[in-house]
Image (cartoon, rainbow, N blue to C red):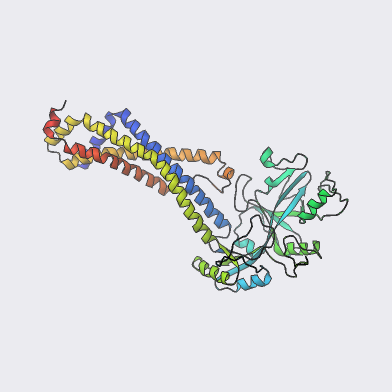
Length: 468
């Protein structure tokens, strides 16, 4: 019997029992869709991680930290391989030393501090990240509008993260974006904003009798002390809206040298916020940075450069190490999610086996006639396995269509990951997952139909013909 004949007979047998075939295929559809959607959630998390790493300078970027300086959104508690936290500060000498390490292309300092922002009746806060022009370029920040700060201009120019507008609230009601779902009435790219660098002085002055009345500049009239407010404008804004989360979402970027000049002038004779001080409370002569961003010429040299920097007494965080650590966690998540979905397909496999066994009992006389006519046992086995494979193929194809629909609904309900704090879609289905799931559904169908096919092969031709 040729393959064409086997395919024709298998197809006609499935068509004769439409309702039973439909119900069996439905089980495969649900099982395939469950597996694909579950795995797609893990892949969506993984893709978000890759984008975050790329926005942080890629796999050739290294973050070098030392003794604490600055006011970061996240505390840098990384330690060296010896388990001891570094006591060396990241200053200009340290940055120059890092730049001399073999295979290092760029070593740029980064300083972070929390700031307050005031515009009319709105007030907000954010993380100010000061970097050199080379460091900003290496960070691969996607701009939606404007440009990066102009170095040496003497004016503090800001690049707002696309989530900064959500950090503002009305001073009268205390309600912000997440309470009202409305952005402040501020043109961030063109309006000037008052920036307060001395947060401690600002909050202390509020407690000591500041008038928080209205006015375009925020309306504070000091009764006991004055906190300097800097008029600043934006030169650019990170690409994306308030619902599009990214690695740059909550940050405000500016030129490092310009910020240093402003800080030294404003805090003349006293410690700059986040800067280390001596035991007597006096500031150090040298400016200390939050960390240094180091870029390596090739990913193959990242581990060697990281080891060299650790030997110098600094703490090191590489995107490669972070990525490997997260990938192992995502592998566990995907295995768990895939296992949950596989239960549905396992139930579908039982349904296929049941359908095939029922088909054999109903077609006992037909099988006997085929054997008497000289059809080989191999052909009988192939016919039943093809029927099972058809059920798996049809169910796998329809299951993938259903999984794409479910994935679209999930991404729409979560605002393409923004509601969950992810950059991009929370559910991601690549082509290889579609092909793999269809192949797996067919394999499950064939395995489920294997023992019923053996049963058909073992039927006695004479007994099968006599069967009523």
